[in-house]
Each structure stands twice: as C-alpha cells, then as structure tokens.
Amino acid sequence: MEVALVVLKNGLTGGVLTILRIALILTPIMVAVELARHYNILEALSGKIKGILDFLTLPVEAAFPLLVGALFGIIYGSALIVDYAREGHLGRRELLLIGIFLSISHSMIEDTLIFSAFGANPLIIVFIRLSLALLLTRLAAYGIDLFDARKSAGTLQKDKELS
Image (cartoon, rainbow, N blue to C red):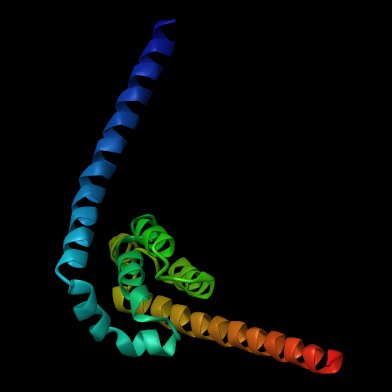
C-alpha cells in the first residue's frame, strides 16, 4: 500500500511540474503572439517570407502560424492555426498545405538542438528538413490546384452537356 501511495504521489507531482513547465513556455509565446498581432509585427514577418509564401501558394495570413510552428513546434503553431481558421483567414487548402509543411519542418530550433547534442550537423538538418518541406508542400499545392481545376472543368463540361 505504501508503494502505491509513493507512486501516486510521484506521478501527481511529476504531472503538475510538467504542466507548470509547459505553461511557463506557452504563456510567453502566446503573449508574444498577441503582441505581434496587436503591433502588426505579422506584416513585417510576412514581408520577410513573402517569397516562400508565394512559392508555396499560401496567403500572407499563413505566415505567422507557419513561422511559429516551424520554429517552436506544432503544438504552438496549432493554437494559431486554429485561431486563424476560426477567424476565416485560412481555408481548407491553406490548412492542408500548412499541415504538410509543418509535419516535416516543425520545431526546427528544439529538434536541431537535440540532434546537434548527439553530434549531428545542424546546417544539414535544417537544410534537408526545409528543402523537403518546401518541395513536398509545393507538390501538394500543385496537386490540389490540378485536382480543383479538373473538378471545375468536369463540372463545367457536365453543365454544357445538360444545356
């Protein structure tokens, strides 16, 4: 019985400490995000990555969630992505493309630091992850656009046949 109480106490203590650590990380990031929105820092950041957004065929509104997710992780980026989707700034296509990009290149700072600690070359890690994310997201955008174009053309063709 004493062993079970010790395990329970350790588990609860560990869980509470983990939640506090996460809160200590998330709270400043969320405050920074809100300040960035309020002071229009988004526009400044968007201008810096406009070429990447154009290549990925994503709107300017995708810049901040994409940057936060790529630098700090999917969990942090997902809060922004959900907010932007609820506010109507991002459609299904954009959400899918952001998801593809972040599934490959999320948490670039943390992951790179972890792998570097084990002797990996950080430049190679970042280069390969970003290259793959850009390439596969662009291919997905092309595929989505091609599918939509064929779908629209098929619908138009059927409408002409019915007339």
